[in-house]
Amino acid sequence: MKKNQTNLITTTSAILVILLTCIYMDTVYAQNTMKFISPIDGDMLCAYDGKMIDGELLTTVTVSAPSGSRIKINGIDAKPSGDVFTADIRLRDYSNQIEFTEANTGSKQTVTVFWLKNYVNKYRLSLDDNILFLKDISEHSARYKSIFENPYLSFLKEVHDTYGTKIHLNIYYQTEGFNLSQMTDKFKNEWKANSGWLRLSFHALQNKPDNPYIASGYDEVKKDCEMVKAQIRRFAGEEQFDHVTTLHWGAATLEGTRALRDGGYTGLAGYFNVGANESPVSYYLDMNQRRHLFERFIWRDNKEGIIFSRIAIVINNYKLDKIVSHLSSLKMGTHRPGYIDLMIHEQYFHPDYVEYQPDYRQKVMTAVKWATDNGYTPAFLSECIFE
Image (cartoon, rainbow, N blue to C red; front, side, top):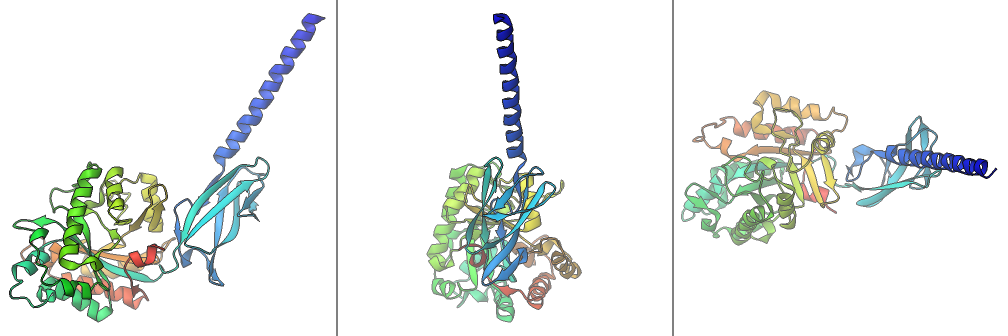
């Protein structure tokens, strides 16, 4: 009798362990299969992501969970369709928390997303690899009465005067025979006076080598960044500082990118390419993050406090007659960009450059005219992505 009782207890215990294990595994499985589909943590939403109602953004939140789950999203009962659940919620603030809960298990997940109220139908012109025009201004400082006597800046002012364009220049510290410590401060007041439409930011120490910061640690990036920032403040004034930049080649370690962030550059532009034969220009982001950014054009790494923004076109990479068709194609995408970032490089402007583009002026004017004709108004990126 005692032996049978012992066997019964052992068998019952084993069954109980199995049942508890199954319940635990089912719970773990349910938790692991529940996730936000859209938006995800760090997404930055605009008017294209929903409807404007009473000054708020009504947007659809989509969650994946096992069929039969009871999902609430920010307290709203989500509509089930198999293992997909949706609910429309309102975003009121720049930063917003979205939480979904599963009533059967008590499981919950939270993401932080952002609502960009001043993002849609804005554009800027951004130019990389800048240094030669600064060398020219410094070398002719005795003769020039204005920075806009420099042919390059004169052209950019023409763009601004014609279309009201806001223009952002990412600059090197040095080139052959010149560095920023030699830049004249004679025109400091003029730089300040034009800071409402013209800004300067750190780009790199110099043009070569390619991908200069692809393996750099925090200290190297920080040193180069601070050198350029100090000189911008000296010859152009604090008014020229902006919280957005594009790193040369856009390749950096996490530590290097943190150095940019700590230097005040909390918004970073890039390409975020996903093709095998394309330069990613995507800082430290992995392939999944790049794919997401390439599709949505903007995303914030909430862990690092850095906003990444995709450049819409690198103008010098396109023939003149292809610029309009490329820009127009962006409006047809699943996630058309609210903000259009037009970019080109300085060196293609200069006739003595080996890859000089004689239609440089027409290319820039064509891109800017397209933006204007399609209802985009000038705004620095920093005016649109920060609170």
